[in-house]
Length: 338
Image 1 (cartoon, rainbow, N blue to C red):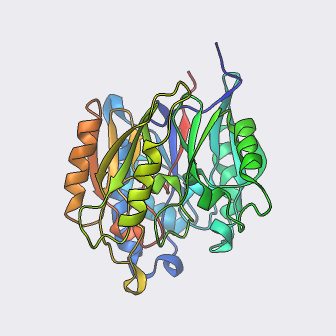
Image 2 (spheres, rainbow, N blue to C red):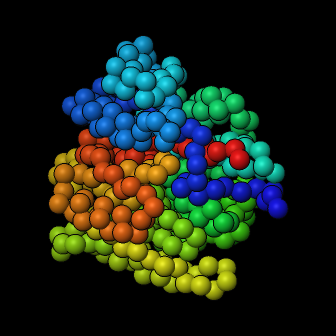
Image 3 (cartoon, one colour):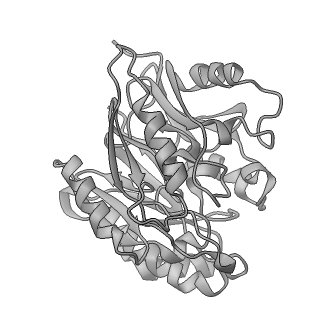
């Protein structure tokens, strides 16, 4: 029986994955070339080849950016000229849903993560991606980003109060009102709330940095390996909250913890919101970000143990992180039309 509205889990087949090429030197400064190098490595792993190749489309804002992306990736990705503010397509792009078996693109309001970084072109990305996918776009009266929503594929969504109930996104809207909008728009029946996300995260607690479903009722989060991990307190809170959650039939969530990156230096010597959770999946593989830290290999082994049917691959994201995120943040996935 076809559900009127539904969103599959991201491990399901994707017809296309969209992203944007980092090219603005004013935004990336000294990290532009290193970020482009990391993008190239990540996209090459994501795209793959042969029967398991994953179609990838990259937006490039200028002729020079188009040439740069094409030179770096060759035929591993389609490069399309389009304006955008920055590379975070998960948040500026649409969320794709099924309605009675047909795909639709949902565009939430985007206000630069609560008014922090509002860039010309970011409000156009959703329409550009929907047009490239040849799928109708529907705008929704809710300020939200794709990185704030983690779907289990069976009618559940995991999110954080810190983000969706932020007075800088949806002032005056109660938790129940936001839940009703999510249910109506995304076809979810169960909204699972985490209180807050990582410290120093300008997204105000995006869920794709802290907890990800790998199956219905099975969720991965992080744990601190060292006492100097600046996220230790919040990681403990997140794991405890997840363990208290239950599926609709009363079955408790199975919570799998993997190592966090620990302390990764950000701008001005402050810790950066580095996370191994910001992975992206394609066909038989999953690409997990690492940050030149020792725990990356430990985290990848634990994630591989939890996902025996997928190849867990790692790719550096230290330079991309200086822009504010990692692999999931820069991608927007179009689910396969079965």
